[in-house]
Length: 353
Image (cartoon, rainbow, N blue to C red; front, side, top):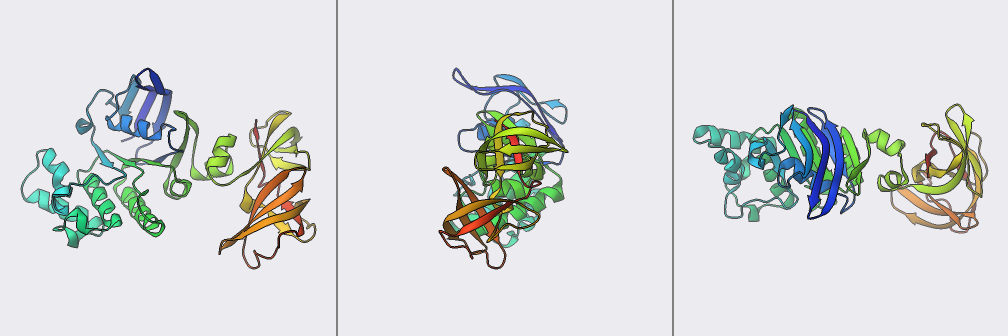
């Protein structure tokens, strides 16, 4: 079932943490709340779960008003950041906990637990205790416990943040596969942009208790609506610029050391604004090249990162940009080198200041 949030307000004491938030999450959607610590994403998740009461507005699951229902009556499965497993119970008993809490007993419980553990690849570890498991295994037990009750809504609060980089990739693949298989409406909270971009159907970027931008991963990354979103979702060069419409969905952006054409999807009128350049969209060469808008630059520093090299470039008058090069010879420009910075108008974006 989908989730409908209308005019939601959440308060801690006299302070409103969330004010007047409205949101529709379609049935079966993998929806991610993305943002830094303190932006309100976990508060919103815990309000959806019923752990934090709403001071105003309403919450509906599939048309059913759950605003005043306690968590155990909301048909949710919850996966916490710290796993929240019972250390004195075996894996089997941890997974069975939600079924027992709902009054289920007998052979059906054992069957459902076995099936849930097989789905997360842990069918052989049912008799172990959490202390005997790795972090990735404990997180998969927590996932099995959430899924075994067949919830209408799955809620996940930074479930991968305690895992190392390789395990995070493995577990996020497990989560997305199981979510797609079960077609469960899922709300996933993270501060990690890579997790959000790789896992989500929809992303809501949160800022100060509000959703700054809502959209598909490709939309959020390629067409940020604010400097906050551009800066938080991926690396971005943000240059203050004077904007002037140029027709055909393009705008002329004058940032002091250069004047280039950029894509203007929302037809911003002549005004002060921001020119957004993603580091990976920039091109470096020893001389101006056809097909690009070319600006002179000087390499100030470089960082070799294996699959890419990240360059800090000086455009003059204190204006610097970062460029990430991939492919053969990506580390071929030394500090101090004079280069030509190539910009494709279709890869440059402008937003209102």
